[in-house]
Structures are given as C-alpha cells and as structure tokens.
Length: 181
Image (cartoon, rainbow, N blue to C red):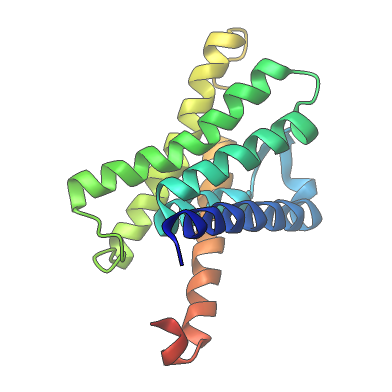
C-alpha cells in the first residue's frame, strides 16, 4: 500500500471515528451539555487523542477537517471566525501534547513505551491543553467571559478521553492475538 493511500485512510478513519463518537455523545450525553461545544462528558475528545497517538500528523489533519465541518455546520454555523479558530484549536491541542510526549518521553510510533501511567498523564495533559487553548481564544475574542466553562470542558474532555481509551483497550484485548499484531 502506498504511503499516500495509508495517510488518506488514516485521515478518513479519524473523521469517521470522530463523527461516530459525536453522534453517540449527542445520543447519550445531551443533557450534560454546559453550552454549545462544552459538555461534562465529551467522547470526541477521546477520539482526538486516540487518533493523534495512533496516526500522528494524519490524525491531526483528519481532526482539523472534521472539526471545521462540525463547527461550521453544527456548533457555530453563524460564527465563521469561531468555527475556523475552533477547528484549529481542537486539532492543535492533541497534536501538541503528542509532540511534547515524543520529545520528553521518546514516544515511539508503535506506542510501545506508552505505559498506563504515561497514558493517564497524557490524557490529563490533553484534557487541560484543549480547554486552555480554547479559553485563551475566548479571552481574546469574548473578554467578558474569558474562562467560563473551563472546568466543565476540562472535566468533559478527561472523562470522554478515558471512556474512549478504555473502550479501545477493551476491544483490542478481545481481538485474537494474530489480529493484534
């Protein structure tokens, strides 16, 4: 398989997983929404981290494309600037955490040295990075409410990330050994 085809498949997988978890999140956790795009449980956050860890730059590109689509068409169709910036921030946060992990922990592409402790720390770092980037933008764009919802967004991202990662771990543990390789 060519490298380009593999990259396109990883981007498409990221988009599909994100849309599926967004739909599932809307189905299960709509009542836990704090405000548009800020939830007490946000499963797509887990896909952001998972796909970035698994696919690196291709995952980040898939996240950027799907985040723009979701922001422009669903969350903020009347606010083009917020949609544009929101898509960038939503994909930049997990990728920045990924790059920091590569630099400081020597994270390998195989994720072989991603211990459970490091994965938990990575999840926590991402759950803080994403809301921090978003709320820094909000402080600039909407100074009257700079950090309203930060705690909720961080909590939702962390809970959603843990749910997605442990679900993925459960699914992978049920696959036959030959398929896992």
